[in-house]
Image (cartoon, rainbow, N blue to C red; front, side):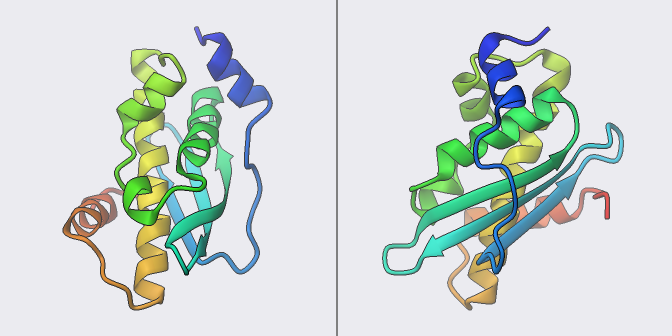
Length: 145
């Protein structure tokens, strides 16, 4: 069902854990499948890059693999760049997911957007129209609390 890259990110996930005193935290969930993701970012405020990123995910192999991959794609990148990582970017880097597991890549991008939004609003920084629009869409979706 899963390819070698997905299984590698599931069995040996990158950037797993929490960041104490994170600059931004995103939490999203899918009440249908039960997946829940928390994503933590630490930002270098001088150049607005993500200097550290970690995740905790309760879910299936695809949920863990997509969480791991989104952290790899965002680490070291600017907030603006990271906010534009798409589900397709994650799927491409994982070299595919079964169609019924694509929603996991969506959750991973949503967790990242929410962590970025949290960072920007806590620090009273400008929130781009793209991030604001995504945040508003995400909060309308039921989340596992």
